[in-house]
Image (cartoon, rainbow, N blue to C red; front, side, top):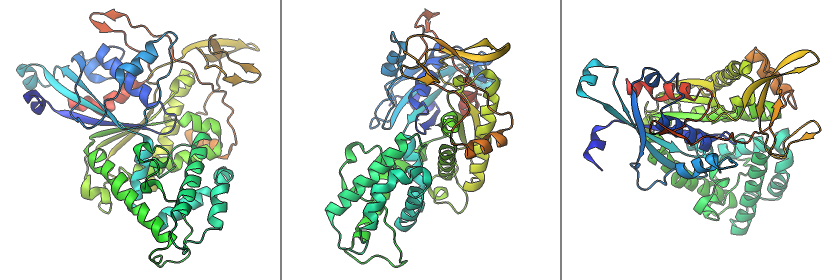
Length: 468
C-alpha cells in the first residue's frame, strides 16, 4: 500500500438491494456520474464546484473480487444496450475523489482527497444477520409460520408434506437431510420467483456459490413441540447443529469481515414493484424492512452493540425505478417509502443510525411527455418497453418506443399503503423498460454523464459530509 493511502481518509459505502432492485445499475451509474463530473446538482460539493475530479484506483482488499464496472458499463453503452446481469457475490470498487475543502485552513494546504470504497453485496446476506440472534427453534418457528401464509402455502406444499411425515426424534439420516434441504430450497426459490422481496433467510440457500451441497446448507426447519433439547443423534439435533454451523461459519464471518467495517449503507428497494403486485408482496416488503433494520440496531441490548457499536451512522433506503412513474408521483413514492421505513423502525426498535429514505432512478430509462385521451391531458412516460411486456392487449416488441400512462400514486402515503395491503393487484399499469441509448462522447476529457433521478441527493446524504 502506498504512503498516500494511509494519509487519505476512506469511507466504506455498503450497497445492497432486495430482489430486482437494480443494485448493479446503481453502482455503475453512480461511478459513471462521479468520474464524468456532471448531472449532480444536488450533490453539494459538486454544486459548490469543489469537486476537481474522480477516478478509479485499485481497491484496498486483495481478497475481495473487484466490481466489474467496465463490463457492466459496456452492457449499457452497447448498441442496442442491455441491463447488466445481477451480481451474486460480494465485490468492491474504489473511487478516489479530489476536491477543494470548504474549510479555509484545509484549502490553504491544497487539494484534499477521499477514497470512496463501494462494497457491493447481496441483500440476502443482510437478511441473514438477524439469524445471529436466533436459535434453531426460533428460526424453525418463524420459517414455518411464513410457509403457512396464504401467499406462500402453495409453494410450501411439498416441504410441509415432507415435514408431516418426518419425525424430529428419529435417528439422524443424511438422505433425509438432503431431501428436506432440497425441498426447503425449492420453496424459497419459488417464493422469490413469485416476486417476493427478500424475507427468505437463510440467504445462501438462494445464492450457494461454492457452498452448494455442503452440510452448511443441508438443513431445514422442523416443528419442535418440546422445549427440551433434542436427544443426541436425532434428526432434530443434526438440524440444530448445522444451523449453528451456518451462523458461525457463514453469517458471522460476513458480519466480522465486511459488514462491521462499513461506514455508510444504502439499501435499494423495489417498492413500486411490491405495490404493483398487491397485498402479499407489500406485507413481504414490510417484513424485509423490519428484518433489515434490526441489523442496524446498535442499542444497549443488541449483540451488534458489542461488535459494531455505532460505526454505520447513516443508512439510506432508496425506492428504485422512479422513472416508471411521472414526476408528479416521485414525491409520493418518496412518502410511501418513508412511511414503510418509519413503521419498520418502530417494529425493529432501531436507534443510533441516522436513517433516511428517498425515491430515485440511478439510470433513467424514460422521458416525460403528455398524451390526450378523451379530452384529458395525461402525464406519460416515453421509452422502449422490454420485449414481451404487455398492457391490456398490446404486447411490446422491444424495439419500438411507446408513450405510456402508468397511473398516479395516491397523495396520502398512509392511504396508499392501506390500499396496497388490501389489494390483490394494483391499478397501476407498469412495464419494464429497456435501457436508454447512451452517449459515450468525451467532453473536456470526461465521458458523458448518465441521466438519473435523485442520484445526486442519495450521494449527498451518504458522503457529502466527508467532503467538507
